[in-house]
Image (cartoon, rainbow, N blue to C red; front, side, top):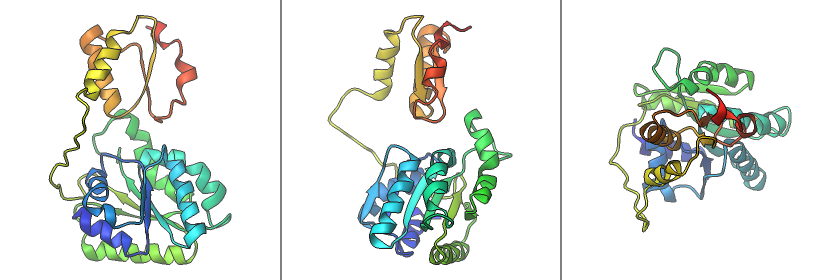
Length: 250
């Protein structure tokens, strides 16, 4: 499926605001809305977490009467649950919105350890939240996607939400987007310089993703181990106070 087609069909639902946290499963989708498709929506906002995206979608609907689209990795559902259940559900304010969720850790598929449990419970969690959904992959036809979006439109009219769960490899690969800036220092080199200054008693908390992978590699290269690192799967430092002594552990 072409990301261009997918995004334009979302826009045809009357959605003018798109907000979310980039995800590797949704990379082609994110690249398109950040580049060629950037003028398609009135607003494209990348906040600090998925819960904030829910807040933005609420504000969009209250201000304009239009639903918004929220994109995220399925692990981000954890951040979205509280604002969703407190404000968005039909038993509260009934705010319609569309979720586009990258499915990491799908049962039966090889993936990172931190994705396994959330991957297994993703559909169950949506069921508990009473969010109807459709799973799409690289075999999903335009007709099937159209039927799913028709159901989404019906959900919106009933002040409910709808989710599209996107499997890895759903979107056709596009030309690699090269992002250049005026700075010569690369992220990995910056991480290397930080690691070189660490003492044995120092502890490091990092978010999972590229930063953690590069931190892991640099610690393994420089120290021969990664004993001082705690990989915070939430990406927001919530585990920090519980691991202040990790550097002293064996």
